[in-house]
Length: 485
Image (tube, rainbow, N blue to C red):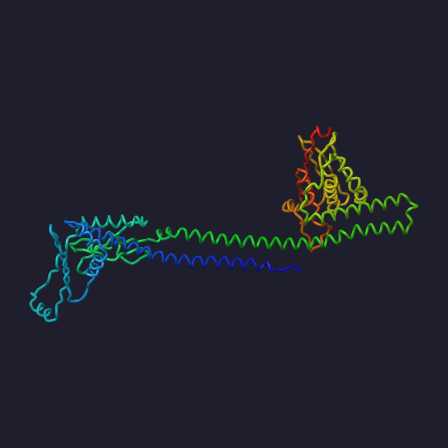
């Protein structure tokens, strides 16, 4: 019974690939979230630096000490805390002054108690109160701030439009914006609110609607490594499964080979044994014609047995398909004629008609007599085994340039196109029911035939159609005329 474990390997492999892909997706999502937060922190830092640079640029008097003060991180933190101070009844005042000799920066908080608040309320005039007029927007400083932020964000790879929102300094109401729609948290980036000049009339916030493209671009090597990892894993699984499948097919072929070879070896031995037994039992020494017939039959079967044994011994030989000793000069037409003569009894018994089409001049090649004889014996044997009753066998020769072309055609059942190359593989036989085929064989004949022809510097292939027979084409190089002389 054939094993069925291989059919479970494919779903297991598919599940393993899905798990591998899923793990890669989870890892990439987590990495994307971490990279996004890191990128937002970098953007925040650049906006903060732009605010410091813009504030420093708005000063009329600049010196080394002033720059060191206004460009320091400590001042940025102090100024941000001062701007964000929002406590009831606490007001803050900022003032600065710079002259030729010195400068000062004053930050002051004012606390009002409840009594003062009541007194102020009583003293307040009656009637409707007008809100204070909004402070004008410093367009020059705003443009400088926008240029600073754009330049710094471009260096980080942001190519999408940069938007801003201006808030009033006191109550942080929206004073101006170039953002389409209302500012809201999205996939992109919204900076903190910063003062960007020393007039402190407005605060600035930078907005980028989408930064996912930049983050994915920064993760491109991680993405590439994940894709390569999944592809390599898939290829590894594919090659392992393909190897297991081929190993299984090879094991099945070996089992089929052993089963069929057992029957193949029994047949010639049984025939020889029966022939010898008949010679002794019926005293055929007194009948020379019958004796010669039985001896010839025994020789054919012994030759067949020898050929099968040589094929089996050549399976693991490093010299398989190579010429075992120095080649000799052969007339290939005479060699093929000798093989046909040795099969005359089988041809006559099968009622096979042989059509012989040689060329007029001899076709000399360099080769090994035994190996080439085995080649044509295999071809004729296949034609007899698979050909129809009273079949026709055609052997023809043609000379083309420096090559002799040989065609061996039969009118057997033929074969499908998908098998016409596979029949030259070791152990392969056209599928049939069970391990024992209707026609016995080892699956080595055509394989050793191709190896021998290739070793002689030639080529071999076949053409066949179901129901229209099979034709095997061989091509061997002709020996030089100088060598023949």
